[in-house]
Length: 597
Image (cartoon, rainbow, N blue to C red; front, side, top):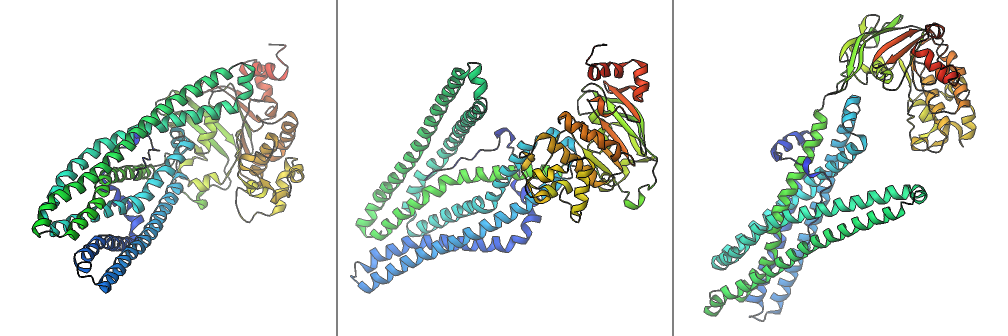
């Protein structure tokens, strides 16, 4: 018998949680499965009953059938013994099938609800919780919840039923022998608690060391050329060897405790058999205790130690599963910092004239001010550019406009109505977005252009590509619009990915087009293609453009120079050059190579 110590979740994240409180929160997910749980419990009790009947039948064979030399009785008891064993196995199989299905159904519903809730959370939540770690945590916690409502809960119920049933039968058969067995069993049960806690700690250390080795190998294999050129292969071998030695030492130590513990437990079972034989010897000689009863006690004792020892570990697994469920409910209880508004489609101004940033201040939690009293207007049909050094607040303005975050102070309005009053779907439905980081999905080119929206004609998709002079993508991707795009667009060049990103925004035909470093990741040729099409795209809509390459915004209606969270300069390209300030300095560096700097 071995215990699997699963500690994939950080130990410091496991807190004491009321199992009853977790069950109360889980009740909406469990309500439809009450019948299945009841059926599973009934099957479990029948299975335990079948197992407990075996030694009783064996006693009858030894005490009755064999002394009477009754072949029919021996055959009958043998068939009955085999039948009870088969019955117990069938009941156990059915119980496992039901509980596994219930556990999977509960976790499916819970994960679906968690995912749908995550889609509503503001970007600040994902800033605090990195996506990779968050998804790994959800997967790990969900697996623990599945085990709670399938394996763990039924194992706990089975252990309780087996121990209570075994001790009950043993007490009825002979209370004296049972008390002797308990005198040995209780100290062993108490000893298992600190031993199992020690073993869990040891295996956490083993997994930690293994994770470090895996991390080193993954990192060094990716960096073999660098290690070779800089002569650092010896360092890599040394670190892997050092961590390997640590892993070996920890694993040997853990196995020493594990196999030593189970050997000790096996010795205790043998000692218990000796206790039964010694305590029952006088009764057998006096005729008060039958040989079949002694054999029955031996059989029950062998069934008793495992459940008693596993009881404490099962309780620990229940507590950890409850903590995992609580963490999932923490996600569900998280409220978004960008709540939905109350104004619908019919309330949106059809002939709006401008979007106004009114005294906007913003900072991240416990951080410095990123924006300080920013005020400006995006007039309908205008192209407004945001330029300036990194960290000036340009991308933050975009995030506020898209309602990924909310202003700490001030507000953003459209014709006097705070954009927070509109439903997110209504507001964002007016926006087209091209980010510097390209987000493409595994699927077809068409699905990436439409972002999985249905009912958009293929001709419209081709027209969007033509608008940015990117029709050649249809030839470069086998299958055209139905051609395959790998996750992240890894089968495309960076320029092609950005063109798809740009065409996606064009296809949406938004009132307001937002380009955040839209050409920062493309080659000069692709940049010129995008720049030539930009004038046509923004002609009948408001455009907010964030750019480091000033060649893309020289024709903007108005340019805002952001520095240290404030608008340091504003005006047209020509006006800012005449002012000979920050913008003019940036132009000399970029447009003329700095010869006049």
